Image (cartoon, rainbow, N blue to C red; front, side):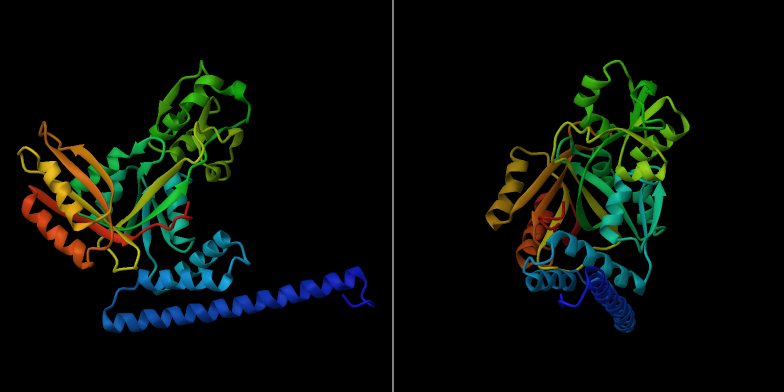
Length: 366
């Protein structure tokens, strides 16, 4: 600060500099948007996919290297994810189905993945999301597949058996549960409503703090929040967004029984993206009815040196004793090793389906 400057004059100069920087930001953002639209036009001429996950991963890695930790890394990534997604969607606006109504955790996951530039479409059930994606009524859907506390979301796994869609991406969402109602007073609560998994994730808190209050399962946390806004005897276990969306008051924050509660969501669409350089592949298969079938199948992957990150079984509806297996492995279907291993699995399994290959979620994405 110049010795002749008063504190107010020095503050004014800094604010003027900030305004100038903001003007530069806006000008460069508009220029970036024009560049993205031109890329979209060129890709359309060559009939190339609009989304290039490898290019996006390279952008983030370059930015993190340039930043060298000077700007907080996670906020920086969030800012540029919003910018990149907005520019990509300017090439073609997409609609995304999620479990509604507004302010569910699925809604939050969709916004986290796409930013605020997509068209978000609330749907009543996971089955509806899969159905509309399969039939092209929405471009993408976002569905929870597993929670770090309660495990797999079985309705999502069952829908993968029923519908023909491809996994396009994944995202982890930290889950923070709030008990909310119309008044904010615990004395007004006669019943607690929410989706089954949030109620399970808060069962100990509810047992200790509201032992005489019954719970009821509803279709989603958003539905629960909407019900609580209309019936003042109800409280909902819901998200922060639900508080604002439905004008509710907080009775208690952070009522989940375990910290570090995270839900993994999958993005589904009609086709998977190309290689990003750090991918995951999901498979759905059933085994031949013979001794050691599962051991033999796992041996094929072990012999290939593949990293199996998840295996989950689900019963085949109407066929007692028969199961489908969901398997996640590290890598992309275009990788020669995975391509060769999948060819062997097709030959030895009773049924085999490639559910998709997609960019693996970043470690710090939660």
